Length: 493
Image 1 (cartoon, rainbow, N blue to C red):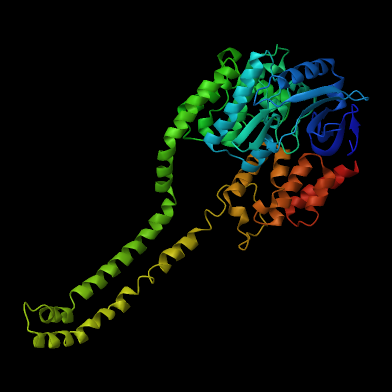
Image 2: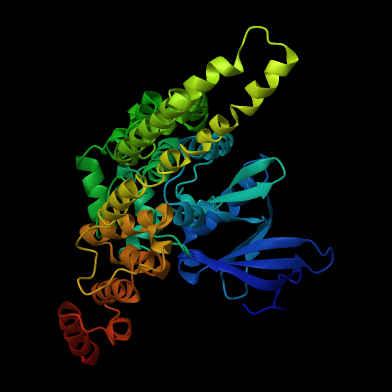
């Protein structure tokens, strides 16, 4: 809808905020009051489903009217003349957790638990009112920045997650999100089960797992394949992907991801005290973690640097010894410290040591050399740098023809290393849309050629043949040339 469009005779569209698989979100203004609001307009397909329309009208408004600080406030709901449903909500300054995850990739454990504790409080309020979210995922969680810190607001109640099963892979459910709604669905949602809080608890566990590890516990090409896999296999432990987390946190995630709904925490209210215990563990560990980090910083560099420290210490010791045991200094000592000399005798005593006072400057050439041994360790460090230069990059992701840039060090930052790792995992798991989007962060690759090769591969696998030809048009890599041949043939069919 274009700016200026009037909805329900009261809300004037100001601008589009975002668009996802279920619909679009607009910034609007009340025509009379002037208050800014956010309006979510569902797409025609979900709007046409009677069950979704009924839940959307009832549950979205009911959850929004609970007055809970972690539930987005809903002011109004209705339908457009063409049948599309809309809901009017409070406008929040911030971004959803899917976008935050895209930027951060792996969260600090305490921050992840603080944010998810607020999600648990919101779920507790909804479950207490008899409302099940059904479609909990990172894009359903808004992280708003307020004077007191980050505040979570849960939205999108009344939307059915089973809608995702009607599509293909659904890997772009929301702008900026790389996951399918099925990634957060409980195994039993593949069947027509009654909605219970256990569905939301499972999704909660997946989200916490993803925030802490940067990856989902399960991946598959299609929603039904994924849910079937969840029914047959226990989720991998978070401890295998991020060691060192508190045992209570590892156990909480495992309980949330249990295949049997009866063994999961009962509802959102049951999650809160367990997260409180985890946060207490994390805060007790914090001082120890700081000390451990200080002890573990660059151990290899310290091992390479200790000979230089030893050499400098030896040179300094030699200089001190030279000054202390100089023959001139020994001769000066008796003349400088007579027990009781009349004033006339004190004059030669002060005059005679003058040539002796000068020699302390002589050891300067001996003390000065300490900088000379230092280049040796620095050379060893420089020669050792190429091996850890790109530690997070998988060999199969790197383009063979790409030259490593020595001028731009942006791709060596921790954030870029995580992005390359995520791209590598996506390629191995054949999640091509994830690979495509990660390779768009071109500053995180050693060269333009390397990033474009990945985008070409992803576009080919996603059947985006025009994009495949565009990305790979100037690349001379033999493997890319084979991909381009296939894309040309398929684009002409």
